[in-house]
Image (cartoon, rainbow, N blue to C red; front, side, top):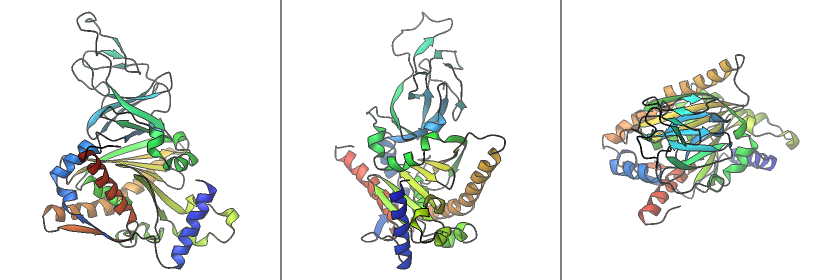
Length: 384
């Protein structure tokens, strides 16, 4: 993070704290409960946000070298991310062009792969997606359209984005002003440690809502992380569709007056919300990445949580990183997600007509405004 940005954030926090205030929007916002319960709303979100919009499909760290392969998905659409000898990251539909079998098992990671062999009939593909051979039956098929189906994608600043509708992706342009921060932390040079996946009983947007405000920390987390973090002031900046939402650690209270020694990241957890569904979170010495997708109903979601370390994990460091992930999952799993489930249950009952986002919940207001704008643009005949 640029020194000037760090100093501005520290000064902004101190002024707000002195005023016993926080950043505020121009007014509260009401949100219909149907945004979390409507099947029609969810259908629109799946079609527009996840199929006609760039989505983070992987990090550079997931396929760092030639021969790396990751089997992943966008909202249930099975995908392969590969890096071939030319160094380029590519994204393909994870389905053999013969009978549609997955070429690589879902959620599988490989390194040092030279090619990809479908387990059904052993059709062999290069890492650039080209069909290399069909054992036994080489002459029995039409040669056209036998390569893996490539998905439009691009890589920049440590992130790989893909778009399912085939429209081109310009990752640099899409990430925009987030790019400087991601580059300053060297996100592209981090290393994957572990990914965990779970189904949660709440709408996918509710998970993101929780990460975009610190107002709840003093209460919901009063027996865990509230001793470490200020509930307010919270720092927030919108970057087009994306945003930066910062929870500030109480250690900042002792930062002193010598600005030449000021460093902001050690005193903050910085959430970069990459629209529509990814949170790239900078902690003291590592990154967490959350990818949240809808599940079978409006009231359920798929939550993928990954941790990335600054150095390749080894026998001496792996326990540290796994412990960090364990603590994260303990707090969210015992405090945040159960609360989301209870809220969703109430909304599903039909007893709540609307929710209110306060002026101090800028992240939620911005996130839901961007969703509404994206849906409106496509429905009115224009798109980004």
